[in-house]
Amino acid sequence: MQPSVKPQNPNFSSGPCSKRPGYDVNNLDISTLGRSHRSSLGKNALGRACSETAELLGLPEGYRVGVVPASDTGAIEMALWSLLGQRAVEVCHWESFGSDWFSDIIKQLKLENVSNHTADYGQLPDLSKVNCDNDVVFTWNGTTSGVKVPNADWIADDRDGLTICDATSAVFAMQMPWEKLDVVTFSWQKVLGGEGAHGMLILSPRAVARLESYTPAWPLPKIFRLTSGGKLNEGIFKGATINTPSMLAVADYLDALNWVREIGGTSAAIAKSEANLAVLAGFVAANDWIEFLAEVPETNSNTSVCFKLTATAEQVKAMVKLLDKEGVAYDIGAYRDAPAGLRIWAGATVEEQDLKDLLPWLTWAYEQVTD
Image (cartoon, rainbow, N blue to C red; front, side, top):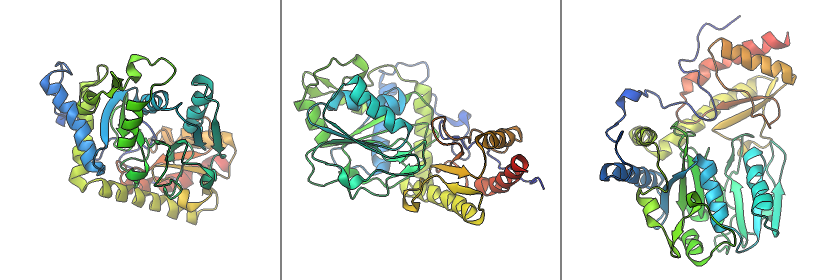
Protein backbone atom coordinates (compact mmCIF):
# COMPACT_ATOMS: atom_id res chain seq x y z
CA MET A 1 0.00 0.00 0.00
CA GLN A 2 1.03 3.59 -0.55
CA PRO A 3 2.53 5.00 2.66
CA SER A 4 0.55 7.67 4.46
CA VAL A 5 3.38 9.62 6.11
CA LYS A 6 5.66 11.79 4.00
CA PRO A 7 8.98 13.36 5.00
CA GLN A 8 8.39 16.86 6.34
CA ASN A 9 11.35 17.97 4.26
CA PRO A 10 11.59 16.15 0.90
CA ASN A 11 14.79 17.92 -0.17
CA PHE A 12 17.43 15.22 -0.57
CA SER A 13 19.48 16.87 -3.32
CA SER A 14 23.26 16.42 -3.26
CA GLY A 15 23.81 20.05 -4.20
CA PRO A 16 22.57 22.58 -3.53
CA CYS A 17 21.66 20.66 -0.41
CA SER A 18 18.82 21.01 2.05
CA LYS A 19 18.77 24.07 4.26
CA ARG A 20 19.33 23.47 7.95
CA PRO A 21 16.40 22.39 10.18
CA GLY A 22 14.40 25.43 11.29
CA TYR A 23 15.86 27.64 8.57
CA ASP A 24 14.02 30.91 7.95
CA VAL A 25 15.43 33.44 5.52
CA ASN A 26 13.73 36.18 7.53
CA ASN A 27 16.09 35.47 10.44
CA LEU A 28 19.25 36.30 8.49
CA ASP A 29 21.29 39.33 9.51
CA ILE A 30 20.97 41.37 6.32
CA SER A 31 22.59 44.54 7.62
CA THR A 32 25.30 44.09 4.98
CA LEU A 33 22.89 44.23 2.03
CA GLY A 34 23.32 47.32 -0.11
CA ARG A 35 26.71 47.97 1.48
CA SER A 36 30.12 47.59 -0.09
CA HIS A 37 31.87 44.31 0.60
CA ARG A 38 34.95 46.46 1.21
CA SER A 39 33.27 48.55 3.90
CA SER A 40 34.18 47.77 7.48
CA LEU A 41 30.77 46.10 7.85
CA GLY A 42 31.22 43.95 4.75
CA LYS A 43 34.81 42.99 5.51
CA ASN A 44 33.84 42.08 9.06
CA ALA A 45 31.14 39.67 7.82
CA LEU A 46 33.53 38.10 5.30
CA GLY A 47 36.27 37.93 7.91
CA ARG A 48 33.90 36.10 10.24
CA ALA A 49 33.16 33.60 7.47
CA CYS A 50 36.88 32.81 7.47
CA SER A 51 37.64 32.93 11.20
CA GLU A 52 34.51 31.09 12.36
CA THR A 53 35.10 28.36 9.78
CA ALA A 54 38.63 27.88 11.11
CA GLU A 55 37.39 27.84 14.70
CA LEU A 56 34.58 25.34 14.13
CA LEU A 57 36.80 23.02 12.11
CA GLY A 58 39.59 23.19 14.68
CA LEU A 59 42.26 24.01 12.11
CA PRO A 60 45.89 23.82 13.21
CA GLU A 61 47.87 26.97 13.94
CA GLY A 62 48.97 28.72 10.76
CA TYR A 63 46.24 27.33 8.51
CA ARG A 64 44.41 30.03 6.57
CA VAL A 65 40.81 30.12 5.33
CA GLY A 66 39.66 32.35 2.48
CA VAL A 67 36.50 33.04 0.52
CA VAL A 68 37.14 32.71 -3.22
CA PRO A 69 35.06 32.89 -6.42
CA ALA A 70 33.15 30.18 -8.25
CA SER A 71 32.23 27.64 -5.58
CA ASP A 72 34.36 24.55 -4.92
CA THR A 73 35.24 24.39 -8.61
CA GLY A 74 36.80 27.84 -8.44
CA ALA A 75 38.67 26.99 -5.26
CA ILE A 76 40.16 23.75 -6.57
CA GLU A 77 41.06 25.26 -9.95
CA MET A 78 42.73 28.19 -8.16
CA ALA A 79 44.86 25.69 -6.24
CA LEU A 80 45.74 23.62 -9.30
CA TRP A 81 46.74 26.58 -11.45
CA SER A 82 48.63 28.36 -8.66
CA LEU A 83 50.51 25.47 -7.05
CA LEU A 84 51.15 22.70 -9.58
CA GLY A 85 54.08 22.48 -11.98
CA GLN A 86 57.03 22.53 -9.59
CA ARG A 87 57.17 18.74 -9.21
CA ALA A 88 55.48 15.59 -10.50
CA VAL A 89 51.78 15.12 -9.78
CA GLU A 90 49.74 12.13 -8.58
CA VAL A 91 46.01 12.35 -9.32
CA CYS A 92 43.55 10.03 -7.57
CA HIS A 93 40.04 9.94 -8.99
CA TRP A 94 37.10 7.57 -8.99
CA GLU A 95 34.15 9.72 -10.03
CA SER A 96 33.13 12.63 -12.23
CA PHE A 97 34.64 15.65 -10.52
CA GLY A 98 37.96 14.02 -9.71
CA SER A 99 38.14 13.03 -13.37
CA ASP A 100 37.56 16.67 -14.29
CA TRP A 101 40.56 17.74 -12.23
CA PHE A 102 42.70 15.07 -13.88
CA SER A 103 41.56 16.24 -17.31
CA ASP A 104 42.39 19.86 -16.52
CA ILE A 105 45.84 18.93 -15.26
CA ILE A 106 46.82 17.06 -18.41
CA LYS A 107 44.80 18.94 -21.06
CA GLN A 108 44.70 22.54 -19.81
CA LEU A 109 47.83 22.85 -17.67
CA LYS A 110 49.44 20.29 -19.98
CA LEU A 111 51.63 18.83 -17.26
CA GLU A 112 53.60 15.83 -18.46
CA ASN A 113 54.86 14.05 -15.34
CA VAL A 114 51.43 12.97 -14.05
CA SER A 115 50.56 9.61 -12.48
CA ASN A 116 46.95 8.52 -12.85
CA HIS A 117 45.39 6.51 -10.00
CA THR A 118 41.83 5.75 -11.01
CA ALA A 119 39.00 3.32 -10.33
CA ASP A 120 35.46 2.68 -11.50
CA TYR A 121 32.38 4.05 -9.76
CA GLY A 122 31.94 2.26 -6.45
CA GLN A 123 35.65 1.60 -5.97
CA LEU A 124 38.79 3.34 -4.74
CA PRO A 125 42.18 3.14 -6.48
CA ASP A 126 45.08 1.54 -4.63
CA LEU A 127 46.17 4.54 -2.59
CA SER A 128 49.20 2.69 -1.22
CA LYS A 129 50.82 3.27 -4.62
CA VAL A 130 50.63 7.07 -4.31
CA ASN A 131 54.04 8.75 -3.99
CA CYS A 132 53.55 11.61 -1.55
CA ASP A 133 56.91 13.15 -2.42
CA ASN A 134 55.01 14.35 -5.50
CA ASP A 135 52.03 16.69 -5.35
CA VAL A 136 48.83 14.72 -4.79
CA VAL A 137 45.36 15.77 -5.99
CA PHE A 138 42.31 13.87 -4.80
CA THR A 139 38.73 14.14 -3.61
CA TRP A 140 38.02 13.13 -0.02
CA ASN A 141 34.48 12.10 -0.84
CA GLY A 142 33.31 11.28 -4.34
CA THR A 143 30.05 13.21 -4.44
CA THR A 144 28.83 11.46 -7.59
CA SER A 145 29.94 7.95 -6.57
CA GLY A 146 29.24 7.84 -2.84
CA VAL A 147 32.79 6.59 -2.21
CA LYS A 148 35.08 8.30 0.30
CA VAL A 149 38.62 7.66 1.48
CA PRO A 150 38.28 5.86 4.85
CA ASN A 151 41.38 7.55 6.33
CA ALA A 152 44.58 9.39 5.47
CA ASP A 153 47.02 6.69 6.61
CA TRP A 154 48.35 6.54 3.04
CA ILE A 155 49.56 10.16 3.22
CA ALA A 156 53.11 10.37 4.58
CA ASP A 157 53.75 12.76 7.46
CA ASP A 158 57.23 13.53 6.09
CA ARG A 159 56.04 14.07 2.51
CA ASP A 160 57.84 16.51 0.22
CA GLY A 161 54.85 17.16 -2.02
CA LEU A 162 51.61 18.99 -1.31
CA THR A 163 48.27 17.27 -0.82
CA ILE A 164 45.44 19.11 -2.58
CA CYS A 165 42.05 17.82 -1.46
CA ASP A 166 38.63 18.58 -2.93
CA ALA A 167 36.50 18.03 0.18
CA THR A 168 33.32 19.83 -0.78
CA SER A 169 30.97 17.06 0.38
CA ALA A 170 33.15 16.05 3.33
CA VAL A 171 34.02 19.17 5.36
CA PHE A 172 31.70 19.46 8.40
CA ALA A 173 30.53 15.85 7.85
CA MET A 174 33.67 13.72 8.08
CA GLN A 175 36.75 13.72 10.29
CA MET A 176 39.49 15.55 8.41
CA PRO A 177 43.14 14.94 9.42
CA TRP A 178 44.22 18.50 8.77
CA GLU A 179 47.94 17.93 9.34
CA LYS A 180 47.88 15.55 6.36
CA LEU A 181 46.18 18.11 4.10
CA ASP A 182 47.90 21.14 2.60
CA VAL A 183 45.06 22.51 0.50
CA VAL A 184 41.38 21.82 1.17
CA THR A 185 38.48 23.22 -0.82
CA PHE A 186 34.75 23.16 -0.21
CA SER A 187 31.59 25.13 -0.94
CA TRP A 188 28.77 26.47 1.17
CA GLN A 189 25.95 24.74 -0.67
CA LYS A 190 27.01 21.23 0.30
CA VAL A 191 27.22 20.03 3.91
CA LEU A 192 25.96 23.27 5.47
CA GLY A 193 23.11 23.80 3.02
CA GLY A 194 24.34 27.28 2.16
CA GLU A 195 24.07 29.16 -1.10
CA GLY A 196 26.17 28.63 -4.21
CA ALA A 197 28.72 30.74 -6.13
CA HIS A 198 31.41 30.97 -3.42
CA GLY A 199 34.24 28.60 -2.56
CA MET A 200 36.35 28.13 0.55
CA LEU A 201 40.09 27.67 0.27
CA ILE A 202 42.10 26.33 3.22
CA LEU A 203 45.90 26.54 3.02
CA SER A 204 48.52 24.98 5.28
CA PRO A 205 51.82 26.77 5.97
CA ARG A 206 53.45 24.36 3.51
CA ALA A 207 51.07 25.49 0.77
CA VAL A 208 51.78 29.14 1.59
CA ALA A 209 55.53 28.45 1.37
CA ARG A 210 55.03 26.96 -2.10
CA LEU A 211 53.04 29.99 -3.25
CA GLU A 212 55.76 32.35 -2.07
CA SER A 213 58.66 30.38 -3.56
CA TYR A 214 57.25 29.18 -6.88
CA THR A 215 55.81 31.02 -9.87
CA PRO A 216 53.93 28.94 -12.47
CA ALA A 217 55.07 29.10 -16.08
CA TRP A 218 51.59 30.03 -17.28
CA PRO A 219 49.66 33.28 -16.85
CA LEU A 220 47.07 33.45 -14.07
CA PRO A 221 43.78 35.34 -14.45
CA LYS A 222 42.92 37.82 -11.70
CA ILE A 223 40.47 35.51 -9.91
CA PHE A 224 43.24 32.89 -9.48
CA ARG A 225 45.95 35.19 -8.11
CA LEU A 226 46.83 34.40 -4.49
CA THR A 227 50.08 36.36 -4.32
CA SER A 228 51.26 39.90 -4.88
CA GLY A 229 54.92 40.77 -5.23
CA GLY A 230 55.89 37.21 -4.40
CA LYS A 231 54.01 37.22 -1.09
CA LEU A 232 50.68 35.69 -0.13
CA ASN A 233 47.78 38.12 -0.39
CA GLU A 234 46.83 37.83 3.26
CA GLY A 235 43.76 40.02 2.73
CA ILE A 236 41.97 37.15 0.97
CA PHE A 237 42.08 35.23 4.25
CA LYS A 238 40.79 38.14 6.31
CA GLY A 239 37.71 39.07 4.29
CA ALA A 240 39.13 41.08 1.39
CA THR A 241 37.81 38.96 -1.46
CA ILE A 242 39.28 39.01 -4.97
CA ASN A 243 35.96 39.96 -6.55
CA THR A 244 32.51 41.01 -5.36
CA PRO A 245 30.70 38.32 -3.34
CA SER A 246 27.00 38.03 -2.60
CA MET A 247 26.57 39.52 0.85
CA LEU A 248 23.21 37.74 1.10
CA ALA A 249 24.98 34.43 0.56
CA VAL A 250 27.54 35.42 3.18
CA ALA A 251 24.75 36.16 5.69
CA ASP A 252 23.27 32.76 4.89
CA TYR A 253 26.62 31.04 5.48
CA LEU A 254 27.10 32.78 8.82
CA ASP A 255 23.65 31.55 9.82
CA ALA A 256 24.69 27.98 8.93
CA LEU A 257 27.89 28.28 10.96
CA ASN A 258 25.89 29.54 13.93
CA TRP A 259 23.60 26.52 13.63
CA VAL A 260 26.60 24.17 13.72
CA ARG A 261 27.74 25.92 16.88
CA GLU A 262 24.27 25.61 18.43
CA ILE A 263 23.99 21.86 17.84
CA GLY A 264 27.35 21.21 19.46
CA GLY A 265 29.95 21.97 16.81
CA THR A 266 31.48 20.03 13.95
CA SER A 267 31.57 16.75 15.90
CA ALA A 268 27.79 16.97 16.36
CA ALA A 269 27.28 17.64 12.66
CA ILE A 270 29.43 14.61 11.83
CA ALA A 271 27.44 12.45 14.27
CA LYS A 272 24.16 13.54 12.68
CA SER A 273 25.41 12.58 9.22
CA GLU A 274 26.71 9.21 10.43
CA ALA A 275 23.36 8.48 12.12
CA ASN A 276 21.63 9.25 8.84
CA LEU A 277 23.85 6.79 7.01
CA ALA A 278 23.00 4.16 9.63
CA VAL A 279 19.29 4.57 8.83
CA LEU A 280 19.98 3.98 5.14
CA ALA A 281 22.33 1.07 5.88
CA GLY A 282 19.60 -0.66 7.87
CA PHE A 283 17.25 -0.33 4.91
CA VAL A 284 19.81 -1.78 2.50
CA ALA A 285 20.41 -4.72 4.84
CA ALA A 286 16.67 -5.47 4.93
CA ASN A 287 16.01 -5.30 1.18
CA ASP A 288 17.66 -7.37 -1.53
CA TRP A 289 16.70 -5.07 -4.41
CA ILE A 290 18.92 -2.16 -3.32
CA GLU A 291 22.67 -1.97 -2.62
CA PHE A 292 25.22 0.72 -1.93
CA LEU A 293 27.24 1.69 -4.98
CA ALA A 294 30.33 1.69 -2.76
CA GLU A 295 31.67 -1.85 -2.75
CA VAL A 296 33.57 -1.62 0.56
CA PRO A 297 31.56 -0.53 3.63
CA GLU A 298 34.41 1.54 5.07
CA THR A 299 34.38 3.69 1.92
CA ASN A 300 30.65 4.37 1.99
CA SER A 301 29.91 8.10 1.98
CA ASN A 302 27.76 9.45 4.80
CA THR A 303 26.73 12.50 2.77
CA SER A 304 26.13 11.70 -0.90
CA VAL A 305 24.87 8.16 -0.43
CA CYS A 306 24.63 6.34 -3.76
CA PHE A 307 22.65 3.18 -4.51
CA LYS A 308 22.28 0.69 -7.33
CA LEU A 309 18.99 -1.13 -7.81
CA THR A 310 17.78 -4.38 -9.28
CA ALA A 311 16.00 -2.44 -12.01
CA THR A 312 16.58 -1.09 -15.49
CA ALA A 313 17.74 2.48 -16.03
CA GLU A 314 14.25 3.32 -17.33
CA GLN A 315 12.63 1.87 -14.21
CA VAL A 316 14.95 3.86 -11.97
CA LYS A 317 14.07 7.06 -13.81
CA ALA A 318 10.37 6.26 -13.45
CA MET A 319 10.87 5.66 -9.74
CA VAL A 320 12.63 9.00 -9.26
CA LYS A 321 9.92 10.78 -11.22
CA LEU A 322 7.16 9.10 -9.20
CA LEU A 323 8.70 10.10 -5.86
CA ASP A 324 9.08 13.66 -7.12
CA LYS A 325 5.46 13.78 -8.26
CA GLU A 326 4.28 12.57 -4.86
CA GLY A 327 6.29 15.30 -3.12
CA VAL A 328 8.24 12.69 -1.18
CA ALA A 329 11.80 13.08 -2.48
CA TYR A 330 13.26 15.65 -4.83
CA ASP A 331 16.43 15.35 -6.90
CA ILE A 332 17.51 11.84 -5.87
CA GLY A 333 18.46 10.46 -9.27
CA ALA A 334 22.09 9.40 -9.78
CA TYR A 335 24.50 11.94 -11.24
CA ARG A 336 24.35 12.03 -15.03
CA ASP A 337 27.77 10.36 -15.51
CA ALA A 338 27.25 7.75 -12.78
CA PRO A 339 25.60 4.33 -13.12
CA ALA A 340 21.80 4.42 -13.01
CA GLY A 341 20.57 4.48 -9.44
CA LEU A 342 19.62 6.72 -6.54
CA ARG A 343 21.65 9.35 -4.68
CA ILE A 344 20.27 10.54 -1.35
CA TRP A 345 21.92 13.31 0.61
CA ALA A 346 22.43 12.40 4.26
CA GLY A 347 24.42 15.35 5.57
CA ALA A 348 23.67 17.01 8.88
CA THR A 349 21.02 19.37 7.50
CA VAL A 350 18.83 16.32 6.76
CA GLU A 351 16.79 15.07 9.70
CA GLU A 352 16.95 11.39 10.60
CA GLN A 353 13.16 11.15 10.86
CA ASP A 354 12.75 12.42 7.30
CA LEU A 355 14.96 9.58 6.06
CA LYS A 356 12.95 7.08 8.10
CA ASP A 357 9.74 8.42 6.58
CA LEU A 358 11.25 8.22 3.10
CA LEU A 359 12.17 4.53 3.24
CA PRO A 360 8.65 3.03 2.92
CA TRP A 361 8.14 5.26 -0.09
CA LEU A 362 11.27 3.86 -1.73
CA THR A 363 9.83 0.36 -1.41
CA TRP A 364 6.43 1.48 -2.69
CA ALA A 365 7.89 3.31 -5.70
CA TYR A 366 10.15 0.38 -6.55
CA GLU A 367 7.20 -1.99 -6.53
CA GLN A 368 5.17 0.38 -8.68
CA VAL A 369 7.78 0.55 -11.45
CA THR A 370 8.88 -3.10 -11.41
CA ASP A 371 5.53 -4.92 -11.13
